[in-house]
Length: 157
Image 1 (spheres, helix red, strand yellow):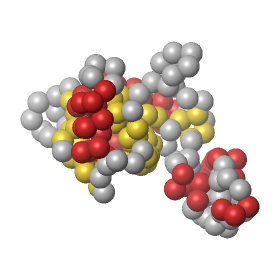
Image 2 (image 1 turned 90 degrees about the horizontal axis):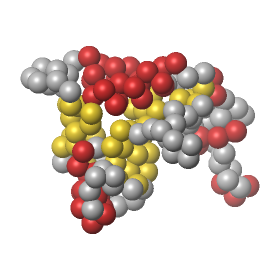
Image 3 (image 1 turned 90 degrees about the vertical axis):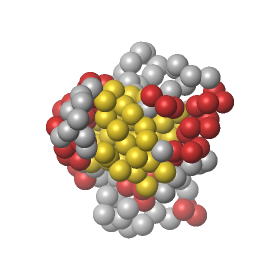
């Protein structure tokens, strides 16, 4: 499935990720011994895996591709870029936007593109920058399926 994102909104998120003093880890990064303060894989029997267990200096800037109530991109920069007092600023995929579409349509498009489970995938900030710089027009396109995604470059507006 092809998802489209507003280029200006993604650029705003990317600018935040690049300038933020720290970056939020994904669950995968929280489990990666190379990102953890103690250098060890987490002991899941000992309790929850927490962001505090990660060395913040090892988490690089990027955007998180999130599939839950819709599909959207959000900066991993901390402090978070807020849209309101209670919500982070996000860039919804036009095809999976719960702010503009009915819930059944959003749910169907989210499952087709991202899969049935909720989740987060990190996209490196430099890959996003390349996507923006090499794509003409005001829309960014991503080919996405439950097991993979691809940032589509287009020199056509």
